[in-house]
Amino acid sequence: QFHMIKYEDLTSVKSLGQGSFTRIFKGCKTDIRDGEKHLTEVLLKELDVAHKNCWESFFEAASLMSQISHKHLLHVYGISVHGVKNIMVQEFVKYGALDLYLKRGRSVSVSWKLDVAKQLASALNFLEEKNIVHGNICAKNLLLAREGDPSQGSSPFVKLSDPGISVAMLGKDVILDRIPWVAPEVLEFPDNLTLECDKWSFGATVWEIFNNGNAPLRGWVLERKRRFYESFQQLPPSQWTELADLISQCMDYQAAFRPSCRSIIRQLNSLITSDYVILHATEPVTQ
Ligand SMILES: N#Cc1ccc(Nc2nc(N)cc(-n3ccc(CO)n3)n2)cc1
Image (cartoon, rainbow, N blue to C red; front, side):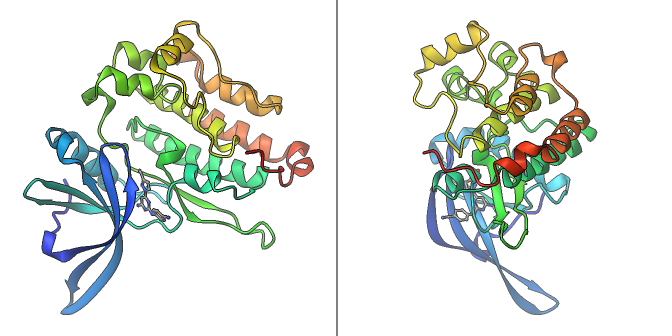
């Protein structure tokens, strides 16, 4: 399923913080190829010992990402197991998670945001064509490989990270905490993740991107989040109605009514050509 990497071929250089149930480190992987020693910069994602029993699901996520390759899907080199340590070895993506990048107050243009949304939609379209469910689409799992420079007209480049441990393995509280990214039907049937669930999460992620990385329903307690779904509420709509329409189509409580990836891409293309983009070249950063 995937490549096993020898622990002694890995060195971790610096801790980069916590994912959920994981710790991430910048590191190096050495391999010998045609008699030469090669050093590769990598991201080491180590499963918390407390969640050691989820190692199958953790590696299931890794194998999902290493069985398929696409320019907007993160490359996973393989895994390394050493005693209680379970480590996923990923390509190091230069600018890290998109939510943190946007929160750091980079003022990016509307077309920059649309470009990122389109790249995510094309990764989702690729997964849909292969009937593969990701299950954890969010800005934290979108990695920025290239910043793009509006003055040079060069565009950003993002890669979708691994989904991590599947929600089905995690407790009800973790699923509640993932409101509003997790589709409502997942609360009832956590074992039945469908392609439509990823569409719902796509909608919440586009909302995040257009709100400069600020999490929707930030700081809400679980009970309040649960009521948000029970009363069929929607996220506060963008003042750009066409964008708000796309987000609410994706976040339809009826899974079957959510648009196909092709329709999502088509709608993003027409947003990109709308005059709203020109009028709002660089939004003032609203923190
Ligand atoms: N300062 C800084 C900085 C931090 C990380 C990277 N690079 C990177 N490469 C990956 N392959 C994955 C990740 N992740 C970050 C969160 C998650 C959770 O999913 N992954 N970050 C680059 C700069």
